[in-house]
Amino acid sequence: MSDSSALYVVVLAGGISHERDVSLRSGRRVADALTSAGHRVVLRDPDAALLPFLAEERPDVVFPALHGSSGEDGSLLELLAALGVATVGSSGAAARRAWSKPVASSLLASAGIAVPESIVLSHEAFRELGASSVLRVVRASLEGDLVVKPASGGSAQGVTIVQDTNDLARAMVEAFTYDDVAVVERRVLGTEITVAVIDTGDGPVALPPVEIEPTTGVYGFEARYNAGETTFYAPSRLDASAIAAASDAAVLAHRTLGLRDLSRVDFIVDGSGRPWFLEANVLPGLTETSLVPLAIEASGTDAATVYSALARAAFARRD
Image (cartoon, rainbow, N blue to C red; front, side):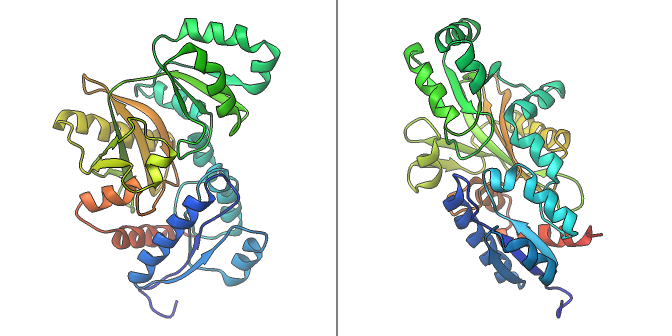
């Protein structure tokens, strides 16, 4: 580094997952924020030239802004660790735990966090055991409205809320479009919130929860990334005890899954103020309509300060 206070940061964005466009938007926002903080920033796509580039360039820090399997299943993160490149975010092993919704839910339920009752089905079992027989058992086991979603992935892609039993088969097909394993869970009614957790070296801290109120009632892909589709409240309008419970649960989830630097944990808070875990994100969206930037702003700081602190923390723990 020519300047002791500046870092050479490579921001990774793009990839080949279903969330490529979202990742590109996140990457540009991260790159702009880090540049405004005085760092030298290069924006790169994780293509066939990436690993040779990193081996030759030896940047101070890599900041992944990847979404979907290209960044969140742990593969790339383990390769970056093998290269000895300081990287913002969780380890490959921790990313895999969070990437699999059934694994994450099981671990967090054991830690005492409320998780909706669910049944996990592989596409193979769904076909071999007969769709009608499988769905009959699912319907008898889980009461009320259901949520069907891929066992991995983000941005609510492949997620369907099922209120009519006749729609369950179609919802399964939609989920299997994105993953060979689907999760069918009981829908918890309440207030949807997300809690960003930041750790710049002094331990994980929950930022103010962001409350989500989509105009359609469902926080799907369009509601997430199209301005005006959702109203956000940062901080949430929930009472202090519910906010404290969700914040504590988010930090516990972060610790239980072994996450690092930055995560976002999504919950539904029921009428009694109890937070129910939905999913944990190790590389959450950082676009202009994403929730982590809103939480950062609600905490009284700005994205450039936080992203810079995360980059410095990653650089400080390099081998």
